[in-house]
Image (cartoon, rainbow, N blue to C red; front, top):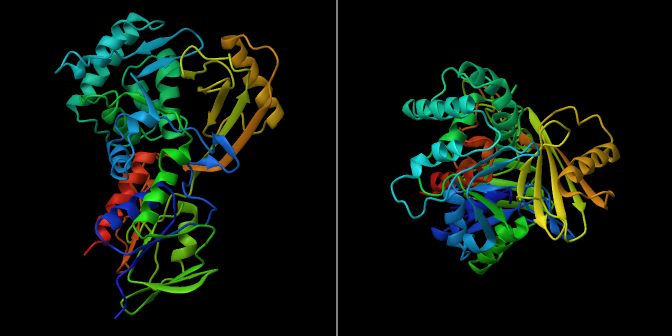
Length: 430
């Protein structure tokens, strides 16, 4: 009989969460990753300690992510800067939720309080937004039928100007899909767990003060290694094959047998690993295929003089090319372009030049500094209406899936990835 052992294929945040959960349950685990390092779409760029392969602002609603960090001996509050939710853009609009730590029981009033003192928002827009959130709470944030965020907002009485300046940038940041195409249901779930939540700290912003690899992947690798997990990076699995009592995995290292397998690979890599399995039929009725539409993200890191800083670490840009700015400290400012848009046909030089000009209107910087341009064409799955998610329990015994594309309550987020990894591990346990 095959020795009990589990292969977790994919070393992103979902795979890491699954490996930690299984190891804590006493299972023998191998974590196999095709890239040279763990972390997937949220890690440090090799050779550049201060730069990440994407920008990730965590919210206070990321309960399972923080619990996972604590489980491997980390203290999230020392690795991230916690700030009350603040929306600030380059036109002077400012909406900040107050810190009500000294007023127990009034957490649900934060948004109404913040709207009442917000700058650059008309009284009518404030009232409509507050009334709409209250109505959504009564409806338990259910959206039926699912449609686009733009149509949903219009039907909800939100003004075109307020949508353009607030709701649409927020949607793009959360779903990496323009409001004209994004799922209203998924955006409602995000609002439910952040701005619409009555739980303490759920809407807070948490900005990493370390690179993303040190936020979880590297400490997790050290923890897993100490607990006997075999971690294999630079090892791409080529083929899966069911055998008696388990699975055979073929990789450049050869063929190995495991009793169970968790596939925590990116959605675009999943079909190739499943297509040779017996009885494979990927359709909505039997086994839904992973998302086939993706959204890009471009990040331009500007290396300004150390004294250059934004008024707030996170700022929205309205009326130009840029969408979001993140102040990484010491003059390093990341400009983010999310989702498909007019920026895609432009050259990297044209994008950087225009973004620098927009940053200059805020910081006063005149000369364009050195910059690093990163483009991920398939950064996340597109959060479209009616999106069908892959089930984590597959038709093949002993084979399970993990990844943010499996977690139906969220768009492509780190929290969704972590939750899916934990759930896959629990399904995998006897």
